Structure formats: C-alpha cells, structure tokens
Length: 233
View 1 (cartoon, rainbow, N blue to C red):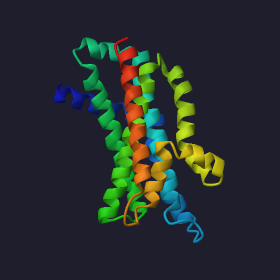
View 2: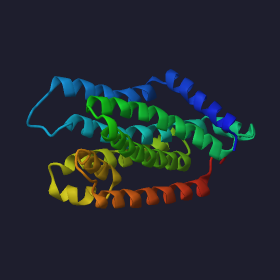
View 3: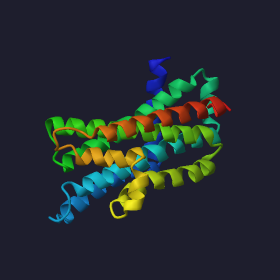
View 4: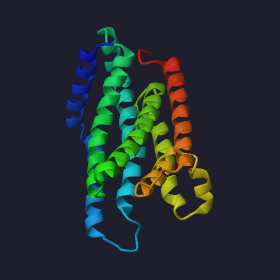
C-alpha cells in the first residue's frame, strides 16, 4: 500500500469537491443551519443543544453516506476508476484515500457542531468520538452502495431510502413510540442517545452494544459488496 498514492487520491477529492458545488453544499449545509437556528430560536422549553443534536445526527446519516456513494459511482460511470486501476492504483488505496477525505472534512464539520454546543475538554472529546463512530459507519455504507452501483442513478436509488431511514427515523421517534421501538436498533438513533448523555457521568452500555452490532453488520455488507462487484468491474 502506497501512502503517496493515498495522499494523491485525497488531494484529487479536494479539487473535485471545490468544482462540484452540490457536494460542497452538503458538507456545509447542516453546520450552517445549526448556527443559524441555535442563535435565531433560543427556546427555553427545548432540550439543551436540541439543534446541535438533531442536525449533527442528520449530518452523520446523510453527508458521508451520500458523498461516498456518489464519488465512487460517478468515477465508475466515467471510467475514471478503471484508469486509476490501470495506473497501478490499488482498490484499497483508492478507498482509503476517498474515505479519509470524507472523514477529515466531516470531522471539521463536527468541530463546528461542538463549538455551537459549547462542548469543551472531555465533553468535546466525547462528542467528537461519537461523531467519528457515526461518520465511519455511514462512510462504509456509502462505499458499499457506490461499489454495488453501476452508475450514479442506481447509486441514488439505493442511497435515498437508506439515508431517509437513518436520518428521519430517529427524528420521528421523538414523537412516536412505535417508531422508537424500531429506530432503537439503528446506529443513528443510538448516536442521538449518546449525545444526550454527554453531560452524564456514564454512557449507556446498551447504546454502545447496538452501535457495535451495527458496525459489524456494515463491515460485513461492505466486504460482501467489495467481493461481489469490486472497483475494477
């Protein structure tokens, strides 16, 4: 595995994002909305850091998933990946390069959420770790969809329902107990639970176990998609 090639892929994605305004907007939209609504609607009846928790979870469930899937599917459709494979870039080098780029830029967005939520010290560290776990999980799902899809349209048809389930089920569960019984099994719901427990003395062990099972399932799906389709198909 070549670090130089991974860094080159990383830099390539930065240039591509600056050219692609649709992807760029996704990275900045939710942090921007959090800043605006937190300062514009300081309602005392709302839970502490309500907008931070809400939009941070939607950010985790939507942005890394859709961007990772879109990047891989687009480059497969345009035959860019085939050119990279023929240029002696290994599939894992490409995936690590793109994945590390998604991770880095999403963590920058996470710092904005942390700053708006006034997290400091260990609380900020806890918040960033929770965000990291969610981002990695969604990035792996996005990679699986991108690898499985033949083009951008098929990637979008798979991404949208998955994204809606991960982002909106936790939000709906706040008002519907029946939905809450289902949503508790997905990692995005447990991410919200862990964020709400940052100020407590200990984190819920059940949430950690459910997230661990989710990550295991996501890894299995990713491995299956990679072995079935690969990147050079």
